[in-house]
Length: 86
Image (cartoon, rainbow, N blue to C red; front, side, top):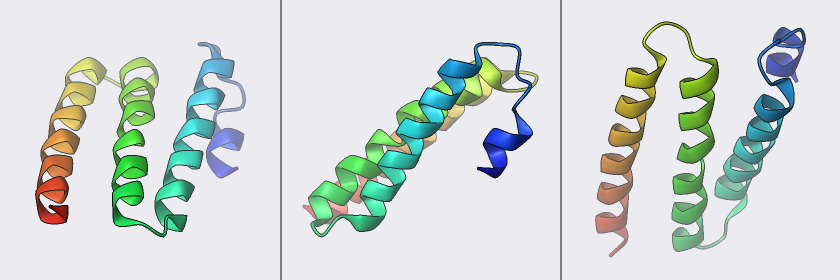
């Protein structure tokens, strides 16, 4: 709610940003509430997608490069988590 209130007057596609925030919130709640490690891994990996678009579209300077770095670091982290699960 604090983030939505801070960006209330967003001019650049506010519905898209709010939809991505809702998907992000759902995936993080799913990761926190999962009772299976594999399901937690799936929800945690799903949370990287809204982050990529939120950073890439509504980020500050060099947002495309920052979004790309985030997705690379998230992929490496998810690969290490997956290896630990196996």
